[in-house]
Image 1 (cartoon, one colour):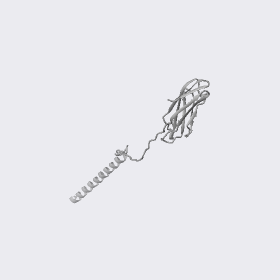
Image 2 (cartoon, one colour):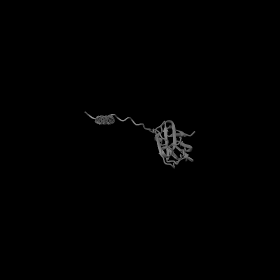
Image 3 (cartoon, rainbow, N blue to C red):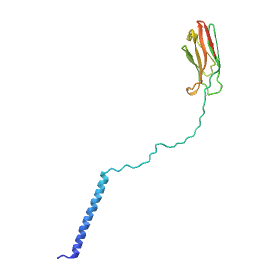
Image 4 (tube, rainbow, N blue to C red):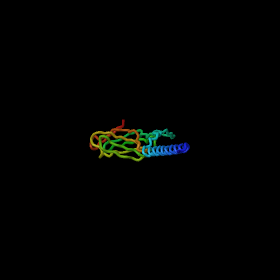
Amino acid sequence: MRHASTRILSTWGQDSHVRRRWIAGAVALSLWGTLVLPAPPRLTLAAWTTTEYARGSLTAGTVSPPTNLRCTAGALTPPTFTWDPPVGGLTRSGFAWSLTGFSGSGTLGPTATSVTIPGALLAIGSGTFSLSASGPGGWTSTQVTGSVGMLTAVLYFCSVP
């Protein structure tokens, strides 16, 4: 016959063995879940805009147009336009002129104060002479204009409003 104390130890040993197997199974299951299941996405705070501060100074500039445009022309004398240099404004890099109604244009240096329109560019009729000052960065002044033309092959005319 068995002793009661032996039976208690035997049950305790079996319970302990079952408990260890149960714990080992739970650990294995949790490790398997960690390896198989993907991690959920992590929350982040993304700054798509940010506040930036800067300091600087700007200076506006103007390319001043030529002033006091005048012209002379006559028999056998092609039109010559003269002007006074612009007053103030940005430094000039030159002048540009063009004819509307005839084909012709050209550029002049920054100290130029006159241009003679070659008679070969004119034909019988009238057109418009335009002149503007050029400044830094390709900026230009407003245009000053005058009328120009030819009455006959040898008689030229011009006027400034």
